[in-house]
Image (tube, rainbow, N blue to C red; front, side, top):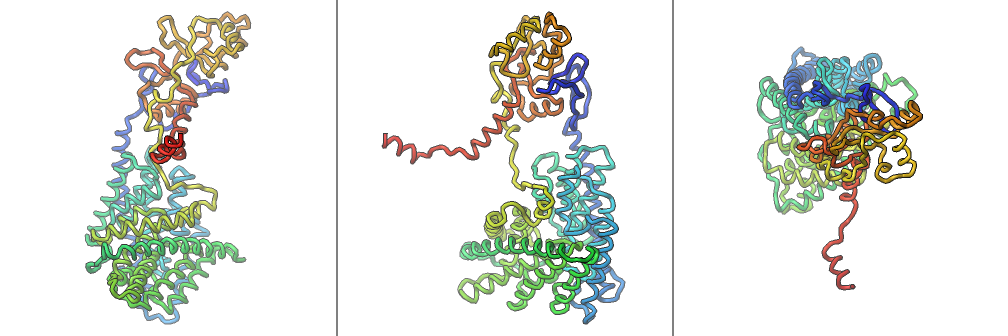
Length: 627
């Protein structure tokens, strides 16, 4: 409740005494007031740490990029060079079926005897660290995840490097936050900085990296997180530009997006992409369920999935490896209709079988390939049916590439920006916005409770709401919900008199658990709770003790113009359930009382805004006419 004379804290409504909780507060004591360390100062410190995390993530992305190239060259071309190359030009014959299996066995051993956190595509694991482990990631994840991903991809796995880099960057940010003296929220920001930097350094997309971290890891838009995120993303992108070049990820020829005459076809594409996103998500987790039913040790699951991949890769070499070159061919319209169908189906099946087996690898690049093929195929099909449509397969491939993954992950805004950044073509923005939001709407209708990122966590009992809004407590001040007729009583009243008034249910003192004590001038003198009163009566059965001696004199207060968020934070930090409201200028003059009902009143107002419909002009007019 409030501090007693012995500096203990009364727990609201219980009458027990315990030390007050100090949740994320640092600072000094000035009189009776604890002055917190300025948030701006902490933001500066976190920003400096974020800069280091961004640079480190950029270097790690480059090292992983080269490591994948090195393993690919060794396995498929028997040469010791680190240039990033495609595995589809190999001449291994039937040996191409064996190579992914070897990689799968190695990854299975690493997952079983190293850490199971390396399994999967990385982003759900980073989300789990934020949700259940206060943004703490073990050092072994930062080491084993990129190595396992490099082995899986380098031996032919149909994955992207971005998921592992995002998880590894997040692990680096988490480790930095654990090394230094930080709060859980600050570690979350640093973890997100590492993840954003990882994506930015992989694809040279700094804006999309920042938005991805906000949509999938932070679920907030605050200066304390946005500024460090931008710093980390910019520095990681600068490392990418210095080491890998400044151009866009995919070099594409100019596209004709056909706006506005192609908009009806984009609407239809949005519907198809939404269904495809849901279908792919459900197929992936269905495949995982089938592997869970296998009567063999999970160490061998990645090898089994890799065997299926090897068989597919033998007939369709384009599914092997990351496939950035194939994505570029699709965006430039270099693939024929039949090859697009083969790539779309084969890459999707290879990815589902491999990733569903529990190996390590990213999800973005392979889904981009399949969805780009879907978009190009759609444009070609429409052109055959309606020759006058003149749709660009490359333009529709780009739009579908952003829409399918955006809808599957519920990070639509991220992938609108992402698809724009990888081509730098401003004309793509309008169709991207339209198709992505339609696909997202379809995905929300068909799979309302989870996404491809959160389904795994939902199965573990973790609920993630990817919608966020400004807290109503930050939009309202105390004066809007406080009790303007606070229960007050003179401090010289005896405890027996107060007990009698409570027994008679005197409305001036019985409406709340805490009663405000005032002096002769009507200013705040302290607070007494019913628990204080019962303890005082036990000590003094005569009831002659004054309530001022029985209650609490050092009182935590709030002000009419203070935000409800700050007032509720005072309650939480001090483990109390009510605050006297006093004027700032006329110090000590009591003008109100804020309890838990006042906080809940703000929540109720938001619920009413969400669900209570006001009668419109038409209905009001109808009532006027009928009356």
